[in-house]
View 1 (tube, rainbow, N blue to C red):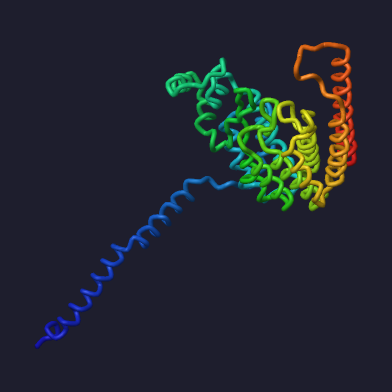
View 2 (spheres, rainbow, N blue to C red):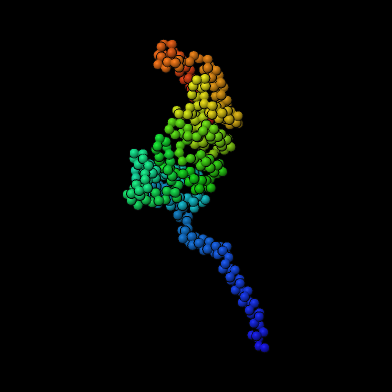
Length: 353
């Protein structure tokens, strides 16, 4: 028996094992997926231009150019530069770039053509909503740079925004600062931008002369910013935080035309939901706690006096007798007095911030 004959069984086993291993490898989706992902990653990495120190040095000149004329393509490139270069510059420069980006986006909105404005807000000059066909026809009229803008609106963090009374605009979505700047700023700034994003609803919180959120939500926002101011007394955005606190105080203690905190109806002078929200502030350990308590004391005292005042005739609403006029004037004067006291209370508190 020769050598080949002696070793056929061993050779057969070896070949069988080798084929089985190859078959298992080919049929293993995890291995194939891993190879595909690795291949795609390598391809993407090769296709993505590397940002050099020289590129980062061009950011300021790019900003200056965009401050004069906002070109969507250049803005998109600038945002990519920000992502790659923020970690290489001092904190002061990061804040400067963030502020500049806000100005650029504001200019982008203010300089937008009527066609771009209509396309991004889906509205016609008459305030009517655009149909899909009208939008397609409008798209054909856009300049190449405008088409780039509307095509890349999501990448540029641009979104439709409701301002009330059937009117829309478009704005920079707050996720922009969270994604691009927050990771390279102080912890307090990250908390700040997260809250700004949380409060964002795609519309103003005051719409059509009234609150678009509940009094309880107003109180929650006020509590957050009061605590934020206490936890981070030297935060970079202190001016805006103070403005937020002042605005939410006014919204809570005064409301708006169609959602007033003080209504002076029948035997009640204040909205019940507003009072519950203000009671929450009075129980907190924030800077607005004493103001809330003073407000509640004023309401309790004033409500008793209000209930004791003579009421105008409800049987004849057209009665303009001197007696009825006197009653109405007395009640109006009382209402104005209470409102003025609340205004002074808020002004005193806001000036102390």
